[in-house]
Amino acid sequence: MISTIGVFDSGFGGLTVLRALAARLPRARFAFLGDTARLPYGSKSRRTIARYAVQSAQFLVREQGAEYLVIACNTASALALDAIQDAVPVPVLGVIEPGAEAARAASRTGDVLVIATAATVESHAYAAACRARGLRALEKACPLLVPLVEEGWTDHPVTAEVIRIYLAELTAEAAAQGMNPDTLVLGCTHYPLLRPLIEAAVPEGMRVIDSAEAAAEAAVRLFNGHAAPVAGEAAPAELLLRCFATDSVEKFERLGSRFLRRPTGKVELVDLGG
Image (cartoon, rainbow, N blue to C red; front, side):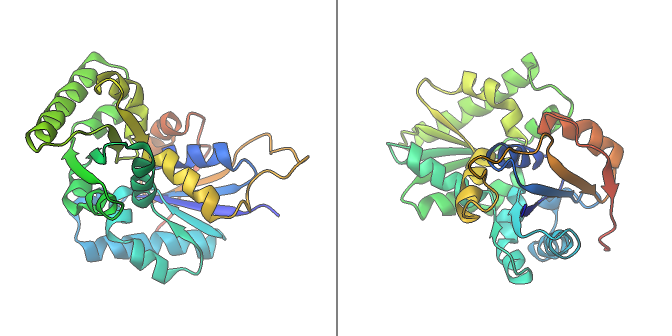
C-alpha cells in the first residue's frame, strides 16, 4: 500500500522539501498545497497564521487522504505547529526542529548561524530550538534573497554579492559577541536554490545545513519507513504528485519547477475560504 504524504507551504518554496522527501521516499504519493492566495504569512498575526495553516492541513488530510503531514513553511512551523497537531489525527513534522537537530549534529563549537526571512527570525524559533539542544544561535533576516530566487537569479553576480554582504555582517556580529560559529542553517525553503553561492561565501570549514534536507531525513524516521522502498520492489517510474494552490496556479507551475527540478504537472486551484 502506498502512503500519502501531505506537504504544505504558504507558497511554493516548500517544493524543495518535497524534492528531498521524494528522493528518500520514492514509493510515496504526495499532495502539495501552496496557500498562495494568503501569502506572505509573516505579516499576519499568530492566530491568523494558525487558522490558515489548520485549514490547509485539514484539506490535505480530509480531502487528499494524507497519512502524514510535513509543514514545509518556516513561519507556520514556528507559529502554528501545535495548532496543526491538535487539528489533525496524523503525524505532523515541521522544518525547524529537524534543522536545529542537524545543526547540533554538525557543530563542534556549539555556535550556529541562521539565515531566514524576517518573520522567521522575529519568531526566534530557530534560536529556541538550538538553545534547547545546547547551542548558541545567531539569526539574521535576509529579505532580498527570496525575491532574487523567484526572479530566477540563483547564479547571478548580484545575488552572490548580496549573500556575501549578509554573511559578512552576520559573521562580524558573531565575532563581536565572542562566538565561534562553525555551522550555518538555511532557515528558508527558498535558500537551497542558493546553496552553491552560499557555500562559496561562508568561511572555510563552515558546514551548511539545508533544513529541507534535514526535514526529509526526519520524516523518514518519523514515518517509520512506511513509504520506504521494499526489497525487490521497484519505485514508480514517475513521481506520484498532485499540486494544489489557492491562487496564481500559472505562476506556481512556472516557478515551482525550479524548486522541484521537474515539472509540477497541472496545478489545481482550491478555495479554502477566508
